Every structure is written in structure tokens, then in C-alpha cells.
Length: 180
Image (tube, rainbow, N blue to C red; front, side, top):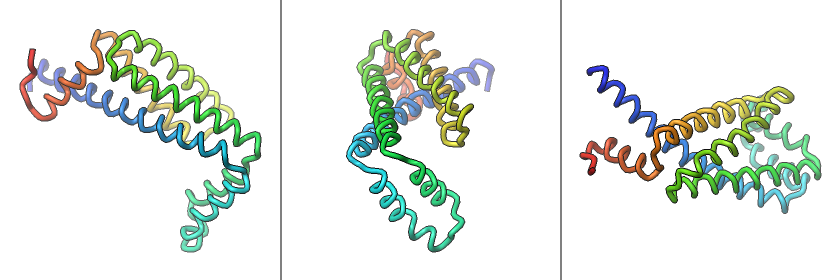
């Protein structure tokens, strides 16, 4: 493979990662929206009951199961005000992510700076959370958001709309010639 072919391959892979990232952001936004809406109608006692029901079988098999114990511990720390805050955060985060994905799918390049700004604001909050209450989940989410911001900036800088990236990437994945 020549240097030019390697660069082209790298660009195609980055395009694919960007598209998968946008898809995952959309799915994540939908899950957050549903989760936030459900939390609005859930009391801390109901959360505790649901956590106990979900983890009971696993904890009966392995009382030291890390994930199950983290769920139980996390839910036990929740109070009524905390549920409302988490619900509001999830709803806001979910709506923003879905709006970004929809705007990108519609095809306006003008949305790229807004998408980067919104994700950047969430990234700053996540960094604050990492400093004050470190967790692996927030660390992974922060890295993922940083990569998506960088890939969005890359697309914006390349003056391409999402549909153009989608079309050329699908053609590349299925090895079809790109129509001009």
C-alpha cells in the first residue's frame, strides 16, 4: 500500500468511526430521554426495589459481584432531590444529543459548531464530575465525547455534510464505486 492509499484508508476508517459515533450518540440520547422520563415518575424506594430485583439473582450466585454491588450502592445513595436532578440531566442530555443527530442527518453544516459546543459543555461538566467524583463510566463517556467532538470538527473542517460522509463511507464499506 502506498502512502496515499494508507492516508485514504485512514480517512475512510475515521469517517466510519464518526458515523458509528453519531449513531451511538443518537441511541444514547434516546436511552437517556427514556430513562429521564421514567425517573420523573419513580421514587427512591421504587428505584431501590428495581435495583434489588435486577441484581438479586446475580448476588445470590456471587455476593461480591462488582456490577451488581455498584448498582445497589449507587441506588442506595439516591434521595428524592437527586432523582429529580438526574432525571432533568438525562432529559436535557438526551434532547440535546437527539437534536444534534437529527440536525446532522438533515444535512446542515451550520450545526457542526453548535454540536461541538453542546458536547463541549457536557464534556466540561463530565470533567468536573471526574475531578469531584471519579468513575470509570464518566471517564469512558468523557473520552468518547472528546473523540466525537474531534471527529465532528474534522468533518466541519473538511466542509462535508453527514449525508456525503455517509454515502461515500457506505460505498467504501461495500466496495462500490463512488458516483460523482
